[in-house]
Image (tube, rainbow, N blue to C red; front, side, top):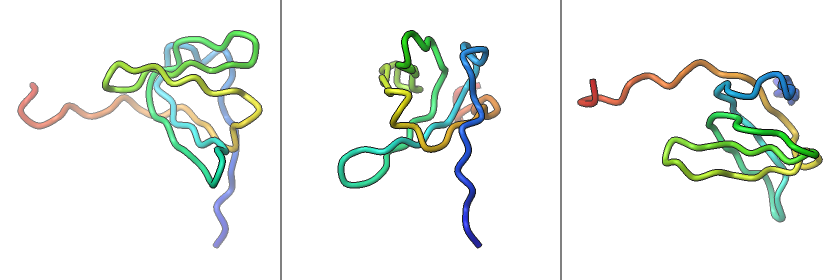
Length: 76
């Protein structure tokens, strides 16, 4: 079985939680977080720890909107 890589996000998804996979030297890298902006082909994704990852649009190989993260145990 072969996985299908699809980019299923647009700039209309700003504010949504997304998962991304992008090409980097030597392989791929994933990022999950809230899409905070997408100016001029540069996605900015805020991860759970508050850091912002900048992803050039041309490096994306897959991306989609995902549900909100479940609460962590002991943090309710």
